[in-house]
Length: 115
Image (cartoon, rainbow, N blue to C red; front, side, top):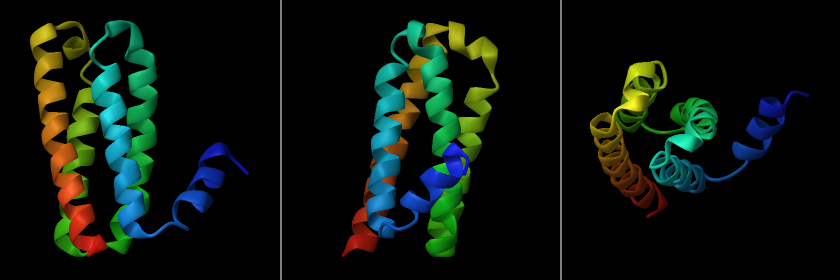
């Protein structure tokens, strides 16, 4: 089994609310680590892993929430492949601010599904 196959098997066993909380924790890690450019490679790896989390959550939630997760994925993908933005403080600040917004939204979705 590949690393991601094993991770997926473990990840999808959890309740959707727990998976969303794991996604939220991942986003918080990305947000914190992205404050220091020395962590760029780690942040990129976390973003890639987060994309898998989104893919593994989306089929198990209602369409509107899955659509929001897809938009989060698009946001992360744009950031991941915009190498120029990685070296601009203003862009990094915008990225971390938007990540904070996504963190709040994922937490809201998680609480709705956990209720």
